[in-house]
Amino acid sequence: MQRFMARRVLLGSNYVRLQRCFSQAAQKDNSVPESDAVLPKMPPFNYSPPPYTGPSADEILAKRKEFLSPSLFHFYTKPLNVVDGKMQYLFDENGRRYLDAFGGIATVSCGHCHPDVIESTINQIKRVQHSTVLYLNNAIADFAQALASKMPGNLKVVFFTNSGTEANELALMIARLYTGCHDVISLRNAYHGNAAATMGATAQCIWKFNVLQSGVHHAVNPDPYRGIFGSDGEKYAKDVHDLIQFGTSGHVAAFISEAIQGVGGIVELAPGYLPAVYSTIRKAGGLCIADEVQCGFARTGSHFWGFENQGVIPDIVTMAKGIGNGIPLGAVVTTPEIAEVLTRRSYFNTFGGNPVCTAAGHAVLRVIENEKLQENALVVGSYLKQRLAALQDKYEIIGDVRGKGCMLGVELVTDRELKTPAKAETLHIMDRMKEMGVLVGKGGFYGNVFRITPPLCFTKEDADFFADVMDYTMSKM
Image (cartoon, rainbow, N blue to C red; front, side):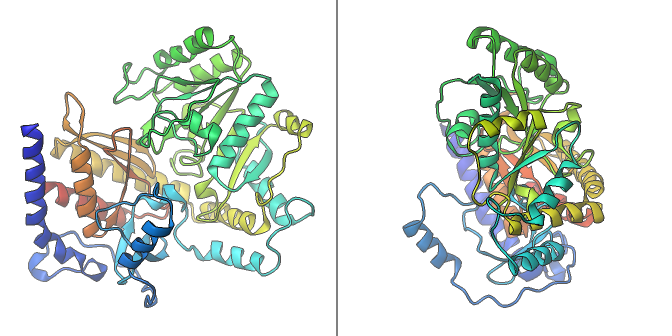
């Protein structure tokens, strides 16, 4: 306890000492006096937001505390009031610019307020907003065809939803109807949504809000950094086999997983894991569901879908977030044979696949292809990962650097050998980086992993600024 309190005192004193240093970086657009040129300089950007005349951050926070759910939380000691965005940047109420190194995973794939996506959305909303269920409209059909063209194998039937939670709920329901089984297997560090079935499958991610459900089984997480078998995917896969043999009737409805866990801390599944598990699941009569809500849509760079990095083809693929670049949209893609099972029930989604959202989604696909954002994610993401690996060599607090493309994680530890989570230090660095103009996410079971998931239009100059700010911040601890 004395050691812990001493570390807290040290963090507090560092915070006070650094306030003067970092306050200079808090000027608009990150400009700094010539006398303090050691501070990293944000890349130039040709956009200034219009003046903001709305309520202040304090006023919004007061309303939020009174009228919104107490379960809501916010990043940073002093919450950020974001009022404008353009491509890879966000702006606060004072017009100050921030490099958004996290929003890509939240919703935005091709950049905040991308003009092509805005134009498609506005053009559609001027004509008709809703005609999904009972009438015909080309927007939903055209986007479904374009989306199916990006899928491997016979994955070509699309169900549209409004979110990733809805998509995963529907996928699990389809699997249970198709197989006639109820048992589902997911991973212990997973995150699949916040409705009943998806919360049951979510297990022990950072929020630890697992809702117990019958028939849901959680397999050992194939984490190459913290897992018991290192990077041996086939050894982790044995646990799935054992769950089926001893925890079920020998049959399962589905196995669901992300290829790279997002909320769980940017954990890449150990090599060889998915091929081994998919084989086991199919032998038990089950379907394989790939949750691409966070790692899909070219984010990993080397492939358009995360599961392709493990060389597998799922039976069902779910997606959301980046699919609409901020527009509420999700989708489930499966084969014609599996999709047919829903004709035995009455399933429809009132707003899923509405013309406005599908017009935006189709525009996102075109932007990713036309602007070669998958290639950019690979090049810039690989470059940033190299910069972060160099910081790992420099600072003992960095225990692991991982991920692919524009989906990277940096795990902080106070002891590399014991891998002791550095949760307080993570929050401290995160706050200091915000003061210097960089926004980054966090996650992982212990809340000690930086989630670096920028819009795919991120540049090498942005990557340098990000790495330089992290370097500067850690050097002052």
